[in-house]
Image (cartoon, rainbow, N blue to C red):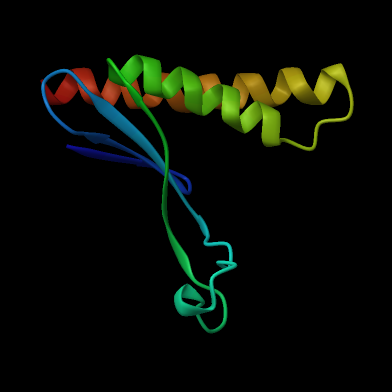
Amino acid sequence: MELKIGNCRILKIDEMNVALEQYKLVPQSKNPNFRHDGDKYDWMHIGYYPSILSALKKLVDKELLESESDDAANLIKKIEELHDKVDKIQIIATELV
């Protein structure tokens, strides 16, 4: 199972684990043997979670921390947008089961 949300994805690893990954720029290595030319993007691991709901909650937390919200009104709007996305995903997931 793979669920993509923006530049993140949730992968079912096995019956007990779900992984959350983000597609982002790979930083340059300090070791010259492992340097790459230009910008390189890849899936970077964020964490393992016991359920899809836990991974979605972490995704919401991560998006809020990375948001550029400078006041409470913008932060509340961002939270509502993220919860709407999560609710839509849960509805689709229950329809598939």
